[in-house]
Image 1 (cartoon, rainbow, N blue to C red):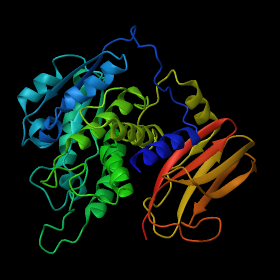
Image 2 (image 1 turned 45 degrees about the horizontal axis):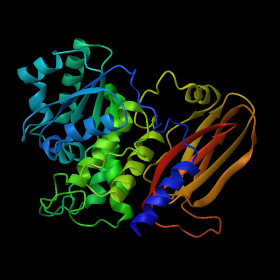
Image 3 (image 1 turned 60 degrees about the horizontal axis):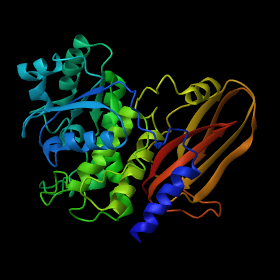
Image 4 (image 1 turned 120 degrees about the vertical axis):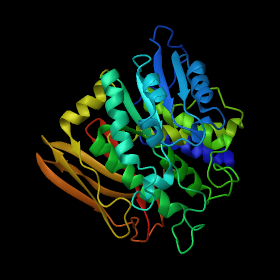
Length: 370
């Protein structure tokens, strides 16, 4: 069964036509060293995330210099006022500074006010860009507690409810503050939803911190964000089974690379195909997302072109063709109500909407909750 899931995911990555550079047999021996600073606490320290990312890069022939700064128990609000954190930021011209948040603070900022994350992100952003304006600041979207907020009296939010709050607030903060998102929590959600939320699978038994599997998945997501490449095929498995590692690699790569615009990630300037797609087509974020009755995509075609819009489920099965025709220049919209071609409701879960414009492809992840 595990092998089947792994195979389906890899087939799906091929099916949806990702136009990213998958790993080649030749190591990138001439590539400059990428300098990465991790700022966080126990979520990064557990299972030595620094080493997991480095070993992924080493195994694919990419040169990186990576350091972790932060002790267990620290919040980003602590780092924002810490002289040692500022000194570490100023230590060198980092290519990436990657920040670790806490799920409850992101999901419920009005309820947990002791360590406010929004002003901390602004302060850290300013310090990072003052040191080196070319540094990319990345915020890791947190994951929800395994039991959501149900351990609080009179609070009924489940893992899924909490993760949706984290998702929405992270995207809002990213747009307002101006950072790239590493969608770790969203990749966790994809895995746990497919496996029907097994206990202590990506979480440890404290319902909170990452297990080794959770940390490995996080490392794969960070790798794909930084290098805009798939981790599929990297031989380093981080101490977990090859089968599970292959599956996590596929989920992480799919979550990141299908949605660069959603995560506010600037495409590599050398990626000619992605640039050409942007010139010929603009797709706006669908709304609402997640949705219960209907979600709508708006898009603009600057010139006459063939366009096909198809919804797939997480296994790569085609659910419904929303549009398949030639359109003239102009603004258009297309909606999906959660039904398949036969008009039957397909069920809650994560889906993908694939837009094919000429030879270009854009894919958006959507979530259906009724």
